[in-house]
Length: 312
Image (cartoon, rainbow, N blue to C red):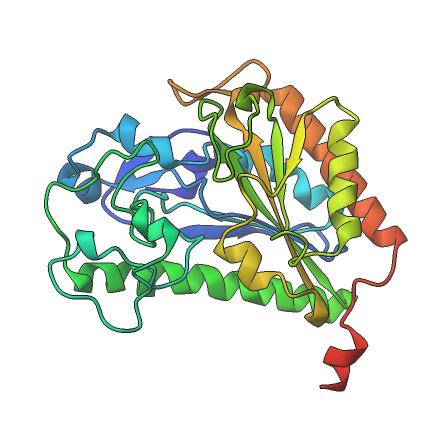
């Protein structure tokens, strides 16, 4: 199995993960922006597919399919892109390391496991029990050893690299801005707050943990650039940002984080999991968004470490 096949947009099934993730570095680092695509992985272990009660097409329902390609433009502004090859159905990189579901494991879970989060309750913990349409992945329970192996081999290295990219940006520019890139299904019309809205018109959701994870000017820049193309934007609902946004969004320390959710209906056939005829146009608009955000960030100051944090 190789990463080139994922870059070309095809799903890959193989016996191992030679590259569970990769960093696409810019020709020259000239931006404090860092981009992450933790859910776009489409390289599947043959043993995982064989052990699942679901076929490959159903397992892929959890993917943020082609999001890594939508944001492949970021090198042009001097920013790196970290993207996963490990699929979300196998390991969710946008969770706490031990957000584990007791229903999934043979043994009792250790005290350090978070077994009570809303995500675990939905079957969508670090080791997912279900795919995004609530269909059970496994015909039998797993061992805790298997979960810990996945976390050790793939979860921790991904987050270690992401942390190093953020630290490098802050050291170079005085602050770092993480854009966590995701996609959302267009067919779900209900969210956690019972908002009466037609999701078919909801094109992008910008998550900043209700203002806690990023400077407001960064959010406004993203929203403004998208609205220029007539997209329907919503902030924080139903997606305020997952673990990555919450964990890396520490503005007082000069680390800002923002989650962007793109409606899959904009750029792909959600049933066939294939890029649609609109994909190039949406990718072009995202490239313009990235370029505009980079310009706005470069033109402004004040995103650095606060005086209080510096004193500490």
